[in-house]
Image 1 (cartoon, rainbow, N blue to C red):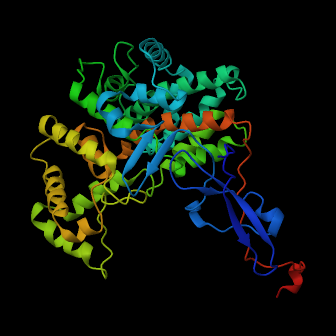
Image 2: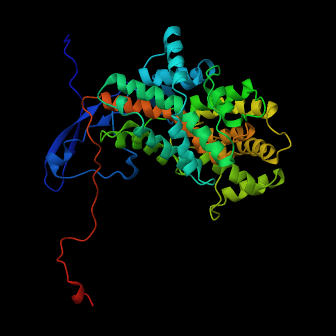
Image 3: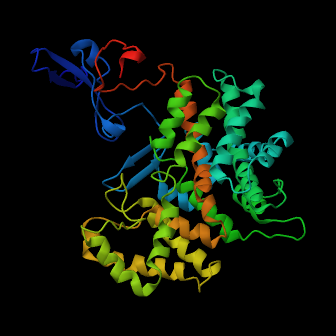
Length: 437
């Protein structure tokens, strides 16, 4: 019996125009679909591949997050999201994403201490907020201030120095809640509230958001835990648009704060980070519980353009595993912190109840996703709608940083350079202005 390893799998490609065939290597991951290596296809056949939206293209090799959309599986470094949500904290998950392993007690204590030490903003950076108009969107302020951090930390942004990369990672994860809180306070016209080292990550953020100098503010433990859960569930989601943006920008060797700022800007898009805001807008459009059945009938009508926001997912063809976890927390938050007389909360619960019992939605696997519940929780916590995507950015920073670190440390890293199918004009001669009629 031979002990020789099986030969690597090949995928044969034949160009019918030339008759030339090429064996393309098939790469196997630890789980998930095989990937065909087409990197030599232009050299061998003189063609590019065409994949709008990169929906069938593996742009990189990664060890961070795995998604199986059909089975409803989400793993961070191999750990199921439900186990992390139940037993972990956002900072512990951030450590896991960055370093690849769950920390020991000593490692987590040191990590928490490092994050706490980095929460303050340079006063000059803080004064930048005064240059924004009071009605500026918070995401525009966050993106600009994150990019401006590149002007403050020249001494620790050598991307080829592992220690500098680590300092950057800790610094941006620590400061992003402070930046978000400053943007919120600026919009309100209230004084900035400095971070407190005696509070944990999420309690500190809530304190910076809602405390004022003239009276004491006590953070609700349930509010802090709910926010921590949301941050865990949003910490990473594989090669999504904003993460891919961070990687593409970072592949140029740019300052890492600029790469994160690019990710913030990409997340701002309503098709990416603004979905939970769209859920509340839909609920306002429905208006009352009495209109739910009529609204769902319109959703089923193919001639009507009405969409059911917060149900279904582009990746998950089963129940969004994050939605299962956040649903219970949503009801806890509404029970303790939410205004039970708020018609939007009552409406959301009724819509969820009816849709989950309707064969039309169940057969199409249109289950509530994480966005359906997160906006409701944020509202119950007192966070305004304009800040929803900022909350998403705070959570996703841990994932962005982890992917940036993985990419920069990869000796095979190359600058991103997608190709195109050109259908413009062919070569033509310049016509002088006087002859153009």
